[in-house]
Amino acid sequence: MKKITVFLGLILFLHSCIDSNLNLKRERVDMHQVNQFHKGSIDLPHRDTIYIPIYSEIHMEHNARKIGLTVTMSIRNTSLKDTIYIEDINHYNSQGELVRKYLNDIMFLTPMQSTAYVIEESEIERELEGGFIVNWGANSSELKPIFQGVMISTHGPQGVSFITEGVSVSAKTLR
Image (tube, rainbow, N blue to C red):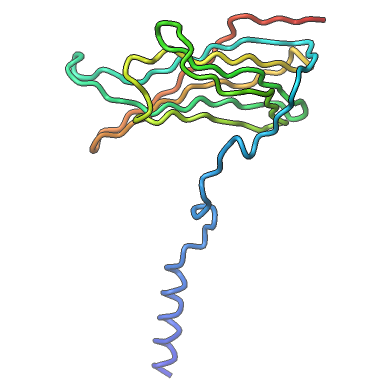
């Protein structure tokens, strides 16, 4: 009886060591494979241009030390029923020069869908801060998607993270 108890205890112990959270084992998903795209143009009654500032590095200790940052630009459709259409996502440096154009076709985000674009710290050339310009549209001016820049880095035990909020630089209602 003692051997059976020890054997069952060992089985329970080994079973508890198995990672049952399958979400942790998922591979990283390329957002371009998940998102849906539309070729051509779409007639939308509401259009807006959003500027999202980003930072490639921050200064610490009275400018004596700089920490490079990984940047994530995130777009979230907060509507429970309406789709938003993203026409352009462009990254500009601090001199106003286009660094990268992210879309060739119109991307649409269905209700509550989100997308993100990551610029790894190793990809960022220093002094290329600037920001993203996102042109988007919808069938209603009531939609309020969220546009954010998320910057993060760790160096040894020191970690830093912060967000920036996108701001509208030209809202237009066409109807």
